[in-house]
Length: 339
Image (cartoon, rainbow, N blue to C red; front, side):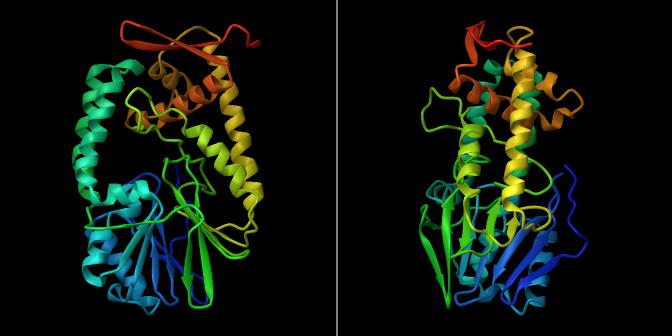
């Protein structure tokens, strides 16, 4: 996952729209924070909770003629560390209203407890995926120090699909675009302007449909890819002049980018089905076969990807599952021909 962004930290998109690239410790590279310099002054996403990220963000805001204290609204596209980690610092200095999808709003006000619950959920399901116990424990151990890159805030206002954010002379509409996470929000400048889309749609990589903790305790949260494909089909119909993604360069070829992502998903789905035609296997083994050269540090991303395709395959009656010895084994359905 290489970050292809240019070296400069900020970019002026229009007279009152700025994109600020905040450094992160993650392989995906810098996070794109969007400043809408209108009344009310609004920031979309923040970067992770680190002194270096804070230093770059505040310096680039100053270059755009804005201080942190000037920020009146803060919109969070999704509940990942590199997109929400500095929210507490921003609110402390500005008193800004925080807006997010209802699921993200709940997570922001309950962040560290939710982090613990998420870890407990994954610890419970890793054995069923066929993951070795030592690796599962390593992943859980790696999770602990990472939470310091996040934050907890006192209150957040739910932003529903279709809600409108009014500015002086301008309106942006919230669009629920689940897939990368269940609660991703995008913002579309009305009637046919820019699209701010977080990590839902990126120009240089296909975002992972991440495994998540579902509301139902019996579910695995494997429908992320199904949600993502539905969201891509929905977003492709918008009239958009410029896309401002959560990472990487801005781009103006929305329809072409969406078509490319859907095409790549189809290719990978066929590869998953072909691999399962070799015989039943747990998700962990399938992930190693689909991504043989990926480092184990990316095992969560690898598992999420193959489980997304398994979920899609089960919905399409292409894949069956059975449990043996506490592990879920996935296999190609008998009626699905494959050569």
